[in-house]
Image (cartoon, rainbow, N blue to C red):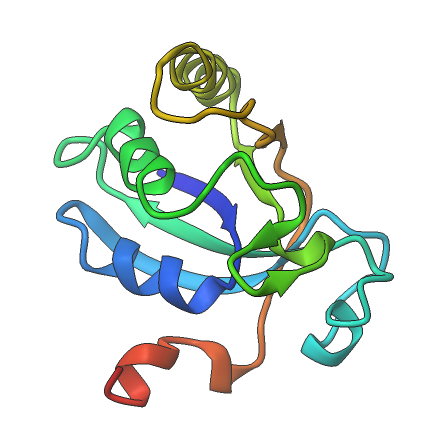
Length: 150
């Protein structure tokens, strides 16, 4: 099965998800913008509307979508609009790009539960939207942390 998440810079999120039991592959790229097949430089202009994202292939017999959401929620700040740490721009937004109605429902319930919890003092701003075309990032971005020993 497939899941796609935007949680700031895709390098860190990809590294975490790639090490998660039940995840069979990860790919970083761009999703949710107006330009076909954007480049990193184009996305960084903050004018294409794309998010940096990680597309995950996973085995639902080993990990549930709910567990993937736990990794997603616990490894970025879902209350900051278009920002993660020092990274600012629409490409760094928090987003869940669902691939079917079940993922949409699970994501919405998960977001509501997080919003109602006392974990954050601000509302969760994570977008939950149908997954449009995912454009893989350039090869030098794939498995970036692993390639650079980080």
